Length: 214
Image (tube, rainbow, N blue to C red; front, top):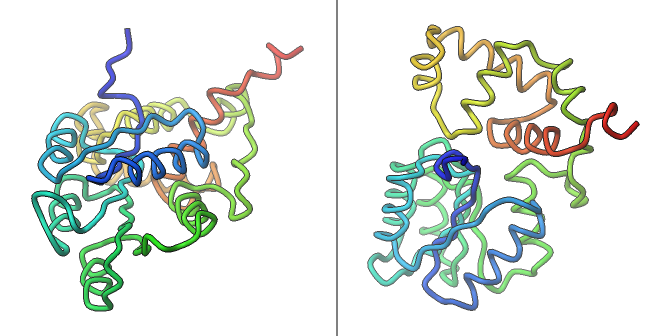
């Protein structure tokens, strides 16, 4: 049985149930099959991240039951420094927007924004084409031809949510070697970042191989 700590997921931090449901639906629409967790408070979100520290995406409000302003961004970035984070808030404040970006937020969306804009932003962050179509899947056979056995081992660790340092320790490699493998993986998969590489990898392994289709 697969450990759920190793399953890629997205995290929604929102204390309004209807808004949270809308965000969850948006993520599932943009990345079908991706597991989505939600938290009603910063404390609950940090509890999830303590157990599963590397989601593919975090979307958070700024006004939560236990925090206000950009503290949520700061705390979530500290808990998951390599995860893209989108702010989704009713607070249309230039100062808050600037502070959030300085803290590492990938985007700052106002709750009055259109559903299409939200989808486009989510797709951009998790590595989908702007038109909203998934990267064309290529099958496990193609994946095995694209990546060397060592690169496959590295990306499998990445999918499990591990940092470069953790991957190096588990595979008995130097940090520099892992970094080199990571750059090559991004290049071979045509990915812009780690999150996009994971999404493309998952799409490939979930696509039936050419042999199985024949």
